[in-house]
Image (cartoon, rainbow, N blue to C red; front, top):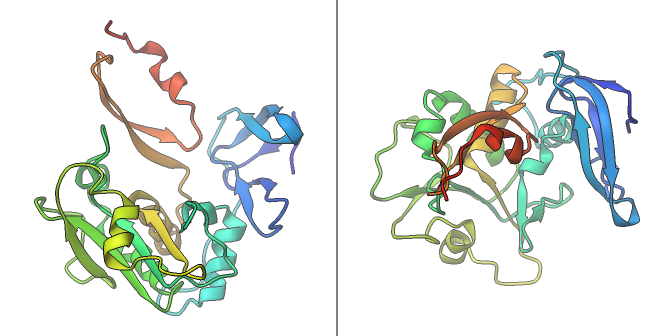
Length: 252
C-alpha cells in the first residue's frame, strides 16, 4: 500500500494480507519509507521506515468497553493493524477473524530462557490488563484462561478479572501456551480452534481501547553470557535487534 519515498504515520496501513483483504499491517513509527525488500514470489522481507516524529494516523475506539460489540472489536483491531497480536492454534498462525474460538489463552508465566519478568515489564498496567482481558471475553463464547506461575506473587492484576485463573509450575516448557492448552482445553477435533496472545499484547490492546493509546512500543529482554550488559529494552515495534546490540561488547 506504500512505496519508497512515501511518508507514513503511526498506524498508517503499510500492507495487507492478499488472502484476507481486511487484515492490515501498520507502521509503528512516523517517518519516510526508505526501502522495501522483497524475496521470492514478491514476499515482503523488510520495510525500512525512518523514525522522525510521533504523528498518528488511526481512529481511536469511541465505544466503552462495557458496551462495545464483538464486530466493533474485530473491525477496530483489523483496521488499526492490531489483529495480528492474536494467534490461533493449531499451527500458531494469525487468528482467523471469521471464526469463533472455543477458548482464549493468556500466559503470565513465560519461562523460556531470558524471558521477561512480566511483573516488572508491565508494572502499573493493571487497568490496561483488565481491559484487555475484558475485550478478549467478547471474542469467545468459551472461557478466557489466564495462566499464572504458582510460585510467583503478582502485583499487575486487579483482584477482579473477567477470566479463569490457572496455576502451573516447573521448568520450561511449563510456561508454553501449547502445554496449557493441552491440559486445560485440549484441541480434540479438526474443527477445534483456540486463540492465544501474550500478556504484553493483551495489555497493549487494553490500553488502546481504554485510553486510545496506540501500542507502537514494546519491552524486550536481551540476555546471555555473551552480553556484557544484559538488560530490558523499550523499543519501537519492528526494531531490528541487531541495531539494539550495535554498542554491545560481546564476551568471547
